[in-house]
Amino acid sequence: MKRSFLIKPMLDDDYPTAKYGKGIYIYDENDKQYLDGSSGAVTAGIGHAVPEIIEAMHAQAQKISFVYRSQFTTEEAERLAEKLSHIEFIKDGEYCSFFVNSGSEATETAMKIAIQYWQEQGKPTRIKVISRWTSYHGITMGALSLSGHSERRKRFVSLLDDLPTIHAPYCYRCPFAESFPGCQLKCASELEGAIQRLGADQIAAFIAEPIIGAAGAVIVPPEGYYERIKEICERYEILFIADEVMTGIGRTGKMLAMEHWDVKPDIIALGKGMSAGYTPIAATLVSEEVMKPIRQGSKVIMSGHTYSANPQSAAVALAVLDYIERHHLVEEAAENGAYLLNELQKLAKNYPIIGDVRGKGLMAGVEFVSNFFSKYPFSKNVNLTNRIVATARDKGLLIYPASAGIEGGDGDAVIISPPLTIKKHEIDQLIHIFRDTIEEVQGGLMMDDEL
Ligand code: PMP
Image (cartoon, rainbow, N blue to C red):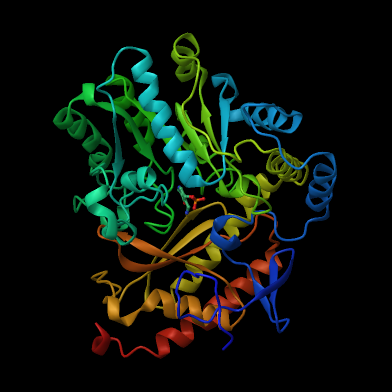
């Protein structure tokens, strides 16, 4: 093998070289075709090499390469912020956008703005942001502090703030060993206990992924969960931050996932699907309520990066949002997502290693168990998730390895989240390869031996 100077996620692994992409497919150096069943990391939401986006990139590159945000504003960044503020579900909140380059920066900026909101009002002790075990909000130190993803935290624990505090609404394995609705949403009410324990005057905000992604393989909360959360936040005057980095921009069949519960956050983090992978851009959307004391106070948000609001990324995100609108991809995601979920649920009936199938829109999670009835997970040395992902890749399907949601990061699961442009016959192809994959991997397991 040729010596590589690129630091890859797994140093010793042999990755195929991506040569080009077209629609929902990626082709490697041998022209082998892969169906992009996870949109990369739930990112490439409109597929590859879309001519309208390439044209927008080209047109913008001819205008100007870069301007720094403290020297100029640009028409592209202004229009993008305006477009985001016009998202139907949140338009009454008059949200303004702070642009960054990654989801981690968007959640970390959200955290800082929440803290600043209280500082401006003479309440500097409100600095904690409560989050949930079984969550992922990003890899930088602040965002990782918020994250309850043990695998990603463990090397840095002594440097992190101890912010994940409450359990996730993980009904398949209820942390309270109850079931909905008899549980009376203990998982949401736990927030109140946490606030009382820590002291409301110490807390700036609560942050949650509307539907938990990487740390829980698409954990959809039960009905009423976010209504209860919002009610508690309001009662204790705590800001609610929705981390929509993975769920936002149509992924779940609504432009923003919080629309499913009609609960409006104070601050929203967006990323991934915003530019569908064509350029790095992410955003922290801040409601006018939160902006007001900052406008009246120091009039500056002490955050930002060199590439924040760069015109090339803004132009691309605008083109992506236009494309999603023009092709009704949010509605398509709702319809095709229901089809995908149904097909996965049908498939699950034949394979006992599939313990649970869950999802909303084109964001589906499949959790694997060594015993269907006891829900006992596979032991780590079976390496099941990686076996499934690798087998699928060999067969020409890309899926995203996730944790099942068991606190501590245990449990095997994958996320299936193809581009919003996928058609029904392509979902059939995805299901076909996924079935072959499970058949082969399940057949190769000596169930009890490997527990
Ligand atoms: N929040 C959520 C919900 C995410 O899924 C991710 C990425 N998986 C992030 C934040 C971090 O985004 P990025 O990798 O772009 O920094």
